[in-house]
Image 1 (cartoon, helix red, strand yellow):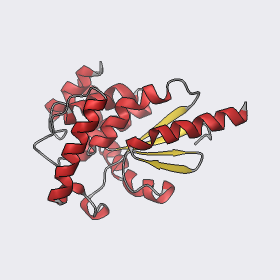
Image 2 (cartoon, rainbow, N blue to C red):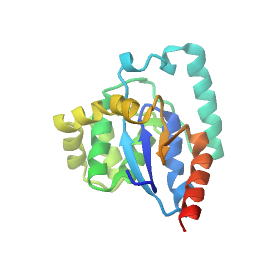
Image 3 (tube, rainbow, N blue to C red):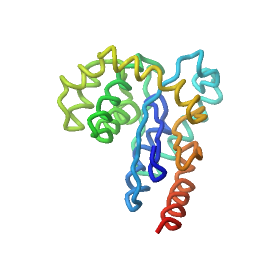
Length: 200
C-alpha cells in the first residue's frame, strides 16, 4: 500500500461502516489520496465481542446509529434478520473492487441493509442493489456465488487482524496508523493533510 493511500476495512454487518462509506467521498474528496477498500466479515468464533449478543449493547447501538443517521440526513431501517450468509454480499463487493468500481455497489448494498432493512443473503436483494448501483444484476449474482470470491472474502477478517491489527469496523489504515470508527475520520483526514503538506 502506498504511503499516500488509505486502506478502508468495512463490513456489511456494521451500521457504523455504512455511515463511514456514506461519508468517505465528502471527507476525502479534496485530498490527493487513494482508497483501498477491503470488505471483511467475522465468524462468531473470530468475534467474541459481537454487540448483537448483548441486549443492552444492541439497544444502545440502535439508538446511537439513529442519532448519527440524523446528523448525515440518512434514513435508517434496521433489518429484522441480524445475521445472514455474509459471504454473498462481501464477495460481490470484492468483485466490484477488483473491477475498480467499488463504491456504487458498496453503498447500494449498505442501503439495502440499513436503509431498507433487507436481508443481504437474499439474491433478490443483491439484484436490487445491483440495479440501484447501475450494475448488471446477473454479474453481481455470479460474483456473489463465486466460490473463489467467497473464500477470498472469508479470509479477510483474519488477514485484517494479522496484517493491520484491525479488531472492528470501520477501520482505516494510513501511514501505518490505525483509525477505528467513523467518528475518527476527522483525525484520519488531518493525518493525510499533514502528510501531504510535509511532502510538498
